[in-house]
Length: 224
Image (cartoon, rainbow, N blue to C red; front, side, top):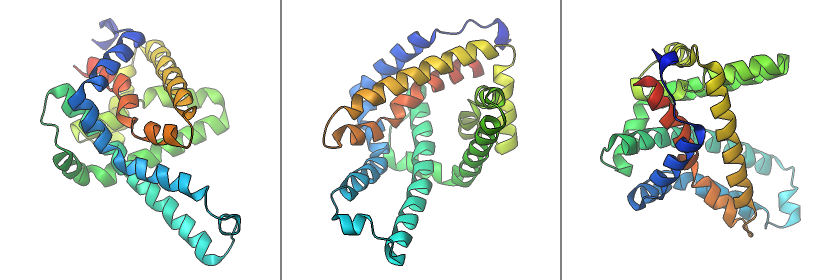
């Protein structure tokens, strides 16, 4: 049973994630997966160098362009996150690391993943707006739902239930690990933002797979 299972410490999982990500073939593969996010990061940086009258323009065309760009960013970011989860799964499973095949395998799962991501966002917002405690409970319960949806091909409801099942009896252990993973991610991202000229922001956008790894490794421990 999961509650009797000895889990790796969050620090061991982070160390293992660093070793996996630093391996040359894995590093190149994951960076390529997240290149679309880097492109959006570069666009965002470039906007800061536009003339002030353009940046502050409230014309219909400018506002419409910004809204459309944000929508495209949202849709693409969901696809890249989905592809990143598939990519991490392939690395852990010792499968072929093909960008083309990874993107192709993400397409059939995209709309379910988008719906699940939307449900999770609304649940977290609702939980934190009501009270802090429900929000934290939802975060722990559903921490593995996206992995379950991608790896097991589950629908939204089943993915949420599967994630909740995985944390049953070990809620506090999972919460502790999530806090450590979150702190680690924040620290790394803060260090990257210190790199000037927007370079750090671009590097950060390429590290999505790295930030997924610790939680994914924990998910694999729970689901095996």
